[in-house]
Length: 128
Image 1 (cartoon, rainbow, N blue to C red):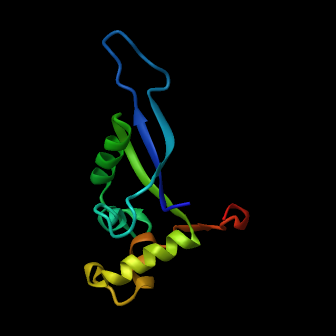
Image 2: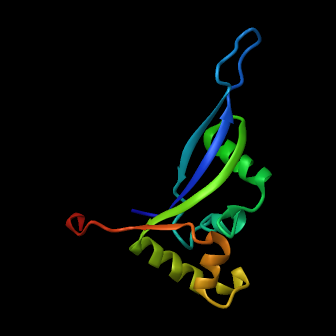
Image 3: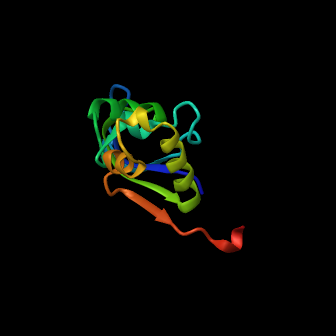
């Protein structure tokens, strides 16, 4: 398993003139796998989250629209879903770039951006 950001996204359908839908809005769960820590774009959490919430609703909607290619009404962060190995890799990447986060520790960075919204799943040892 890798890191996955989980968002709740509400979107609407746009229809042609004379066409209607019921409902017009839908809610879905969106899981986003970011680039590996250290690669370009890996700091999505720094750019989009604060204390486990989206830090800018407009930016979050724009991100979700780019992922889904539909008009997005709202986007909220639910959790970071990961396993111990991927979380360890993330911690190492954060530690290597700690000044980038204006923080004194990796723990502070994780709390600053994710709050308590980190869900660590157990790795199945039979799959190794």
